[in-house]
Amino acid sequence: MKLETITRQVEIAAERFDLRPLRRSDAGLIGLYAGDARLARNTSSIPHPLPPGAAEAFIARACAADRTEDIWAIDGSKTDGSEVMGVISLAHAGDRRAELSYWVAQPYWNTGIATAAIRALIDANPRDSDTFFATVFQDNPASARVLTKLGFRYLGDAETFSVARAAKVATWTYSLKLD
Image (cartoon, rainbow, N blue to C red; front, side, top):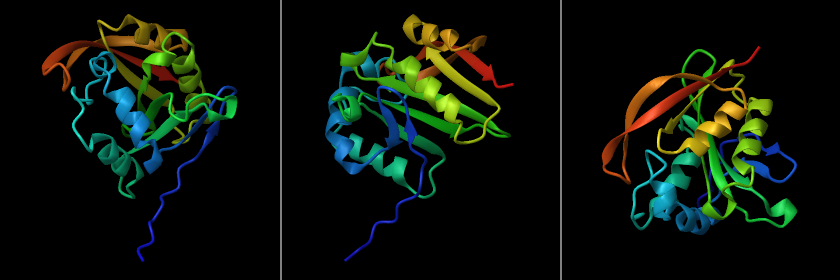
């Protein structure tokens, strides 16, 4: 028998959902939602079509002891929502800085889930960061509005490669400095 080593990651309670570490049973919903072309096109790393095993590989990376990023499921089951309404993550960006990434499943777009999840993560500040960074595609102004509503400030334009689009895409970069 092989025992699985579980690396501890903080759980964060919010009013409508909990942010919790990913688990293997999330693969089906992550695969379903991340397989949506509209969602994949708004990320840099999700391919479309989503290859078999991609959700399982993502979860394995998220649970690895040597991970460089903490990844949480936005789990709405406490309010009779889906166990995975989206995913949010923090990657170490050096010297008390963290890079924030997120996606919300299409059925939960325009419901305030992204704003509430980012707010909960910033309030909990599990990496004791003093600065958060985030990047959004310029053709996704809804994500930019989420960030600016939370106090993120525009830093500048850049571009990043989108796997789903197989092309470089113009981005806006934002930061939030905690007092």
